[in-house]
Image (cartoon, helix red, strand yellow):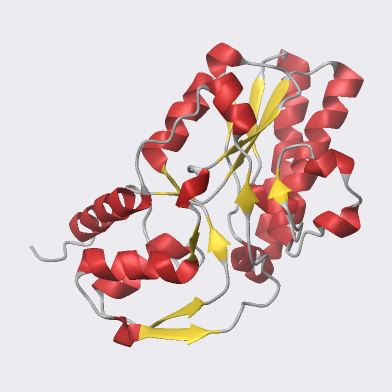
Length: 248
């Protein structure tokens, strides 16, 4: 069973924290109780946000080998996801449940509509399409992973299920870019200049650089991203044009 139900996003969690905790914590506990009763295997979707403000390569064992001060989760969304992981681990010890934890990293692409609480890729695209202003915080680096690549790896867990494991799922390490570079790719794909962009210094309460280690997912789940950011952003722009009937 794939458990993806969650309230998503840092600022969404701050603005609607009761929904966040009810869904991500209590909702996950309800799923675990059902798992304990029915004995199904579960794939729990956590987030790379659990690494918080860790400085260094974010491999899965960071959460085991480092004190919480080094993996300080800077928002309630991240905290609820780590709480969900801890509940899964606790249930495994107490009741023998079998769960694999997944930590997706900036999955984006066709099918994701705009809200102010979405990730930076759909927000940038939406604003660029409608010629609306948006902010780019400089000095932040991220890796993104196109949805087709992510879900192929998620599907592989069923046939390679190792209870207790956790997996980062992200794009290729060489695709790591500054947020401004992603903004530039969006503007190029939409055909707009950066006059709508305001550049600011580093965003507060946000990890500056997230360097992700996906070697475990490559080894166990045949994780092999194929869609580079340039192509993925182009596809996402085309989908959002279709979805919002832009240019019809």
